[in-house]
Length: 205
Image (cartoon, rainbow, N blue to C red; front, side):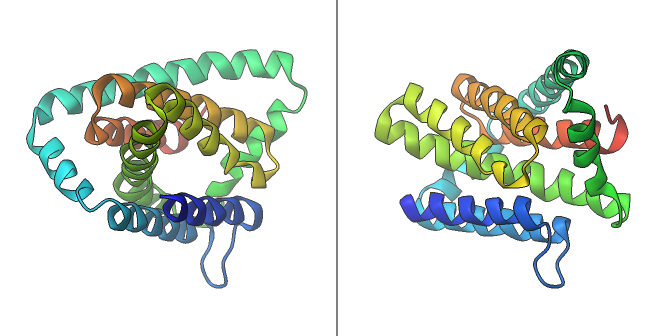
């Protein structure tokens, strides 16, 4: 498990620090990181693939609805949080602008497809479905939850953007709690994908 956690963490820190890997821009590199992380998770836990299939086969319509609703709750929380941050933190406007600057260059269609089909679902399959699950099995549910949320925020530190780190911290806590309640990577994947598309593509804040 240590290797399956350390390698993706290093890859994500490098991604947010440098934004580019040879010919790969930020978005292609992000997609490659997600594939690598999920692959390591599946390799480290031989039964995880079967558990994912079982999750897909059980109560899928309910998980889709709950995933969309949870994404709406998180989006509303960010809309309120943005207003508060703009009043409290002088660095907030520049930090938020830097996040959305990542959309410059690549076509919005590529970004939307990557977020909706790979990045959002893949992050939940790895961070909550694999890492939080394994950490909880080793350390207990509470410690596993807090450790995963902390790591999820820390891998964004390489960006040097306080607002991005704070946003990742909030998301890590929210989706970590969602996973603790429902124990469904599929539900979390839907929530993450819908939220990504809403806040970054359809209705940016």
